[in-house]
Amino acid sequence: MKIALAQLNYHIGNFEANTQKIIQALHHSEEQNADMVVFAELSIGGYPSQDFLEFDDFLQRCENSLQRIAAECKTIACIIGTPVRNHLPKGKPLFNAAAFCYQGNIQYFRKALLPNYDVFDEYRYFEPARDFEILHFKGAKIALTICEDIWDVGNNRLYTVNPMEELIKEEPDLMINIAASPFNYKQAQTRIEILRANVTQYKIPLLYVNQVGAQTELLFDGGSLAFNKNGFVAHNLPFFEESIQIIETESLTEESLSTDKQHIPEKIALIHNALVMGVRDYFHKMGFSKAILGLSGGVDSAVTLAIAAEALGASNVHSLLMPSQFSSDHSVNDALSLATNLGSTTEIIGIESLFATFADALEKSFNNKTFDTAEENIQARIRGVLLMALSNKFGYILLNTSNKSEAAVGYGTLYGDMNGGLSVLGDVYKTEVFELAKYINRNTIIIPVNTIQKPPSAELRPNQKDSDSLPDYAVLDAILYQYIEQKNGPYEIIKAGFDEKTVNRVLRLVNLNEYKRKQTPPILRVSTKAFGMGRRMPIVAKYLS
Image 1 (cartoon, rainbow, N blue to C red):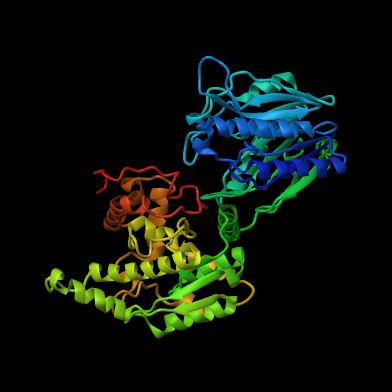
Image 2 (image 1 turned 135 degrees about the horizontal axis):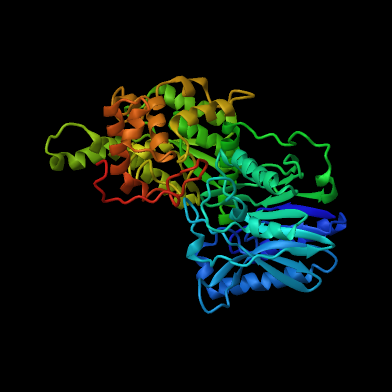
């Protein structure tokens, strides 16, 4: 049997575009003599649709689209993810389902294991399935599951029910899993390990289809796979690209393959490609075309500009340089050199006179208090006002350039350098930003070497350096990783060898600045624990404060 894996980029709520794309993939696969096409989880309405799933109109449009797709499945079948209403008297109003469409008929297979952690909140909307059945098609018995249904494998069980343990009793010939599995830089390897564990346990081939593309902060890398019965990757679809690949299922039962046919890119390459896709899709799906950012000559804004230029085209990204009396000449020169290397437009608006006006207006109110954070924040907010003014006047979307290290400890100014429509680097630690800069320069110098090598500075007071206020970034990032991603408390982190005073100070800063992070733009998620929808912390809390 020939089964096409359709790894596509969907747009939440864009039913006409999604449906047309799905039908085109059906026709393309039919021309290639495929018997069936497999699409991703909740493809029709897009994932995650969140509270759109509470609107009857949204659900009706999902049903209408499914009927249009099913009408195209005359000589070819398809498996596609969709919400389906729960007509039982009890339980949540919906099921997360895989619809099997063929010759005018639609058969539903419902998801049993509903993740309710990190960015997932499926139990808010869906009722878990409790009955399991095999899909019969052209003489084959297929164990059809949806994403998490096959992730609860091995010794560390999270759920009381395992759908595959029920389905395997029917002696299926093939496993198919449709997924909407968000990207993080560890996910590709984890995915292979989980899928291989299923093949190893159940001794049958497995086809896995994931979606690709960005849905605001959630990024999807694709990376769809076909495993042979021995647990080796026989076919793989590319990362971060739409793709349709036809698999001969008979080949998955052969004994010859003994090594994986997949190469997982290095961590920084994955992060870079994910961020480029995230920026591109955010603008495309929102109907935006041009971006603006504040270009300081530092590494954060340099990396943001390089990523945005690759995603949108250099001519569609405008940079504003806003030097003050505290800015160094090399910062302006480095910023201009970068823009020239990329072919991106710039302009310069100095803020020294604007800052002087604010200082004069506030002189009496400040009552001769010495220069401190208040004056530093005024400069950042002046820059924020200028950027938003150009954004409003010309329809630019402001890209925020803050990194995860700064966001974690509150090293940023609300309504100033924390402004923006999208945070590009908000889930990238400062040490990783430097790695990204070097990766961007892997073939030729795009980001000036001086930008990468000079000590980081906000340049808001004379001779300022980040190290005046923060631990060395290598130490800071290591502590933050332990606390945020690993969810270790102060005792565990100190026990791991970190200085007690530094640990307590850093963790206190993280918790005290939760109120700032609640007001930041959406952050492109590339790690296992990003600020935003996947990390829920109280603002008013005593813990570590």
